[in-house]
Amino acid sequence: MIDVDRKIREYAEYINEKIDEYISSEKFSGRESCGLDVMLEAMAYSLKNGGKRIRPLLTLEFCRICGGDYEKAFPFALGAEMIHTYSLIHDDLPCMDDDDMRRGKPSSHKVFGEANALLAGDALLTYAFETVLSAPDMSGEKKAAAGLALAKAAGCSGMIAGQVMDLANEEKAAALEEIRATDRLKTGEMIKVSALMGCIAAGADEERIKAAEKYCECVGLAFQIVDDILDVTSDAETLGKPIGSDAQNGKSTYVSLLGLEKSAELANNLTVEAKSALDIFGDEGEFLSKLADKLLEREN
Image 1: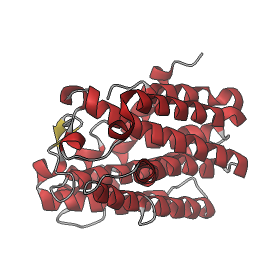
Image 2 (image 1 turned 135 degrees about the vertical axis):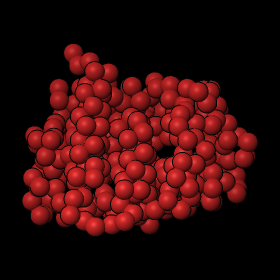
Image 3 (image 1 turned 45 degrees about the vertical axis):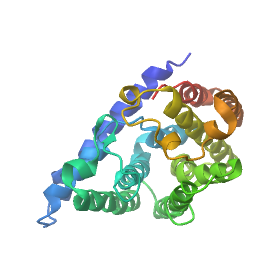
Image 4 (image 1 turned 45 degrees about the horizontal axis):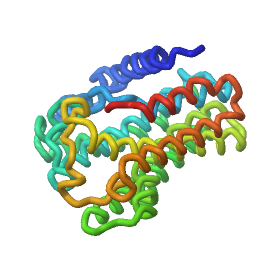
């Protein structure tokens, strides 16, 4: 039996340790830039500010269960986490969600100012692709495939499109399908590409890639539904960020449209569907199956 909490901790510790290597000034030795130290500090502040590390974890674990060496896939995993972090920095800016707290700490723009926070996000975005395309243990073909997939997931037809839709939804009573479409892009695409890059690193076949993507599509939607539920049922101390803003702004959510009970039921059904997608991996899919349950039952 796999101890899911222990394995999550082991992955998080490994990811955090490797992040230190990639975000240190030694990594940039030989590059002259007067603003480098300030940017590295701002980048590290957000990148190292905890989080569940779900995206890089998915890259590493899908690489492993598809027969690859997950350590060699780390640059792909970090690329996904850097883009996720940049999106959070920009989300918190006054021109977007205007949030002063992130994971229990002041948001980047409250610490470094709006301009440097914006630039730190830009720096993480571009460094993500440098990291993926410089992966030392991957073939040029795999690096190109991962970089292209990441660009599509993070760009104007992926995460950015979802963010645009999310902003538009704040100004109207959005229907359930509009919310689902928004979440598939804003949250789901980056979760899905994280797994896809792990599959690419391992040289997985199309059947396993499709199973990985199906798992992530379901887990990603369930994750967002749980977020909406926690925004109503939890508290700011537990979540590490303000709660109730959606209701205050009259924004349509799964909870406002379906109610708490139906929302929880939908998240549960999606989790069951996600776990079913892992059948192709046999016993190797046990951790990811338990991870899906863990994300469903989370409190923050």
